[in-house]
Image (cartoon, rainbow, N blue to C red; front, side, top):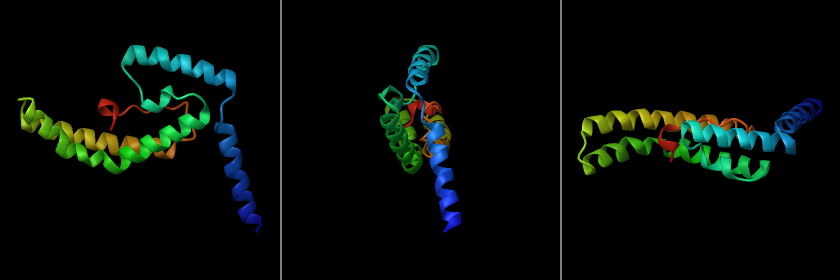
Length: 126
């Protein structure tokens, strides 16, 4: 029972350290807004208000991209054909995006309590 208690307290401590203070969260939001202006849009969960909403959004976003990232193997070549581009290029882009979305989704899934970390995915993910 003592080992379970120490593991539980350790997890509570990690979550408590990951929860930002109000002033820190406001500063982080303004940094994200400036970053988005410089390098394109970030993940959709970044625009949520409050740690709980952001963590939930990041968890859902990570799960969706981890489980469905492989669909880029099909959707990118189809989009290339539909738009009159090279299907071979679409296959290559689909393979790269599929790996990026799946691995990036897994990273978002693992780090969902850390809402100050925004790993951007290819084409904004799924």
